Image (cartoon, rainbow, N blue to C red; front, side, top):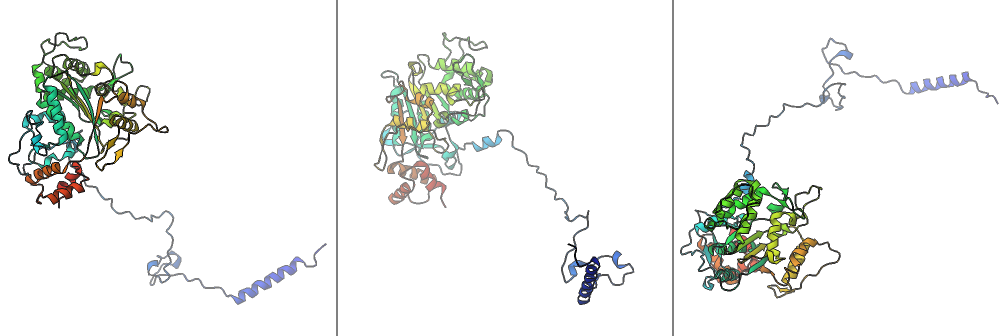
Length: 494
């Protein structure tokens, strides 16, 4: 149906409505701001400064104009300091200072010797080291940077009850009475209880008795993956040797054991494994020096040297290792050709040491007697459940200082253990008490008093060492823990 309204009527009505709206709202005048006294037209003149306007409106920048004003580039001053040489910072971090000329000299301080190292009258006293003994201990890296040697005039050690027992055992083994025996021992304890110091004291007494001392100062240096390595030919399972580490070890052995210069090669020694000619009357110290000068010869010379040291008539051996947990972890920083991590027991030097520590066969015994000692670490050690279980079963039930009984640990079904560690420490040849576990606890009050009196004579303690002062510091240090006692008395002094 057609609409009754035509298009013309609609157009007229829309025009009339537009006119009415224009009459109600007149058009506004657009004000264009211009500058006064300008001869330029308003559209082409300089725009006004909008910062001074009352409205405060900002005009957007023109297209292509720079909106970010960057000042002059700051020139960094050139660092002209000398960069440290490779290995310099590590050497500075591990630097051992054994003397402090600003410390007071303790009058009447005795030196430890082969005659007084088991004297019970010297219990709770501090004995010093002679100059030659210091050089020997420094050669095997027995001193640790965390033991505070640089606070005193000369290095010394506290003769605690465990130290005297160790000295008595070494003296009895050196006397030659009875059959030669091999003592295997693992030193455990809480942090700061003196495990590394006990290892140092045992090496000191072995050196005083003329034993041959071979020490692996830190197992972490062997397993961390910082030294060159290569597979050992004709080894099943595959073993890996570290020529640079063996070369450094051979450099330490003659310095720490001066008596090797008087021992010569035996006539029965086979030279087929050494690719260079060896004089039949060469001394063992000269033989070790050849391996120290050439890493390629380190492994065959080390094998011949150990064979000579185990020959009948040689001095007893002392084998030491610090940081046992790193030698028991599931993997090292080295990889095999199949890109799998190498187990620590597949490293030749650790496998050689653990064969004597665990003593799985009669071939691993020391024919001339000796001690194989390892120390654990609580400040720098990975968590190894297999090692904790093995040490607990070797030690058995024990009683703490508070009188509490700690039961022997049993295997947890849902926990993963390293079977190679358990087999090494708990196999038939090593079980049944052949590996002794020595747990170090805090000092007694008499031993703590002797140590505090030595610190006072050295000028490190200004208070009067009375019974109350000794009891207070003994309690603050957790029952005489050596590391905590030093921290509470010497290191935290105001």
